[in-house]
Length: 269
Image (cartoon, rainbow, N blue to C red):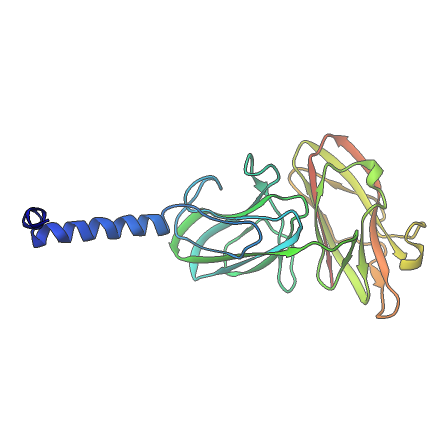
C-alpha cells in the first residue's frame, strides 16, 4: 500500500478523481432513462435522440393494467420533443397522440413545456425524445394510470383512443360516457398508413346503448396515415347530466387495406 501511495502523487489522485467524476456524469446524463413498469419516470433531455432505442430518450415501461399516461415537460428549452409508443416491447416505435391538459388538440410532438394525456391500453412502453434540440433542458416526468374496468370511459376531459387493429365488426363495441352536457367541436383521427378507416359516431342514451342513436357527422370521416380532422359536426351536443348519461360510440366503420391501429381524438367543450 505504501508503494502504491508513493506511485500515486497528488496529481495522480486528481486524475483518478476527475476520471471517476466524468464516468458518473456519463452514467447519469448520457444514457437513455428507462424506468420499471408502473413507476413514475423522471429524466432529462439535453440533446437529440434519433430513436427511442438510443441515448437521450426517456422511456417508461407500462404495466398490463395501464389505461392512460401523462407526460409533463418543464423548461425552458428550444427544440422539438416527440411522443412515441411501442406495442411490441420496444421492437418498433410509432407516434402517439397526446391531449394537452386541461384542453386542446391532440398532438404527437411539442415545442414548449406542458402536460399531455395519452391512452395506452395496448401499449408496452411510452417514450419521450427530442428530434431537434438547440438549447435548454427538458425535465421530463411520465406517469401511468390504471385502466377503467369496462368499455365506458368517463369523459370529463377530451377522450383520446389508441385503437388497435380496427375492424368493421367493432361498430358500437366501445363508447365514451358523458355525465354532463358537452359540445363536440372537432374530431381527429390517424392510422399507421397501412390502410384507411371511414368512421362516424352516434350519441345514445345510457339505457339504450345498443340501439341506434343520433348520428354525429353528416358523412363519415376518413382516417389516413397523415391524419384527418373535421370541425363540421352535424349533431354536436351530447346532453348528459349528473343523473342520466349519454354515450358516444363509433359506427359506420369501413376499412380499406390493413391498418394496424387508429388514433382517434374527440374534442369537446
